[in-house]
Length: 345
Image (cartoon, rainbow, N blue to C red):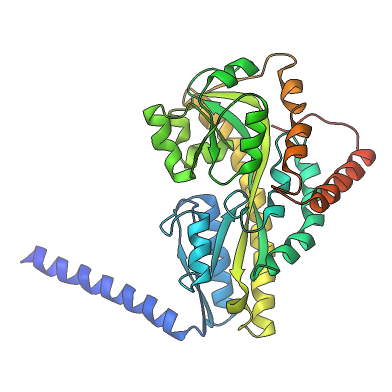
């Protein structure tokens, strides 16, 4: 009898919670259904939820975000297609995933382009107006940039030399022509996979070498198989929070301003949180028997020498010459005013 009463009480509580959620959505005038491949419980998902809660509170419940994390709506291109038919209104997209839609958004992901987060911040801030214009032309409202951070080569086998990398079976993100082309210039035929497929492929041996941030490798559990990290960043990875312009245009000005101002605050904090988590992840990985090894002398110079060849092959294919020229002008301006520095780790 006690168990029966307890179950009735539990069911009643669940009913109250569901009713509260339904009432909150019913009260909202403007519903945005958004998705992301970021795992539920990750700092990216938590920070986005904080942003959504703030917007809902400050709009007196008139704006509501229904969030689908963890890739339940598919990869980036699947999410984009669902935006086109109104099934979704936006989401958090990776630079590689949304690259086929807006190729110029790939520009900061060129391997071995940046030496520090100071360089990244200087260039990123000044590229935002160009990104806003490029996404607007596709009917997408660019809300904010997000960050994965510097990504590293991680493998199930030790990677000390370029030959080690060439001999391993390397993954590349599906629909990412820049990293794929870069790897091909050094003699690798990469295996393209979506991010959700990578862990299984590491487990089966289909791939041996992958590329991720230190925190990202923990969140996605790649570190459980990729136990060897080449301790020099391979590239910078990032993403964006995007909304359908048609849906966004339905908002009155004070609500659209609220979303943008709240996003600016929370996504800047998200970037700070990400960098902190990447720093802390280094020790967590060491504690889990992951080995960090610096590349042999001269090996990074060999890889960097392939960057320009990759750019030559990708200009006006993977990104426009215009965005590349703007990016390099900004980067060179920053470097001319700053003392040289090693790549941040």
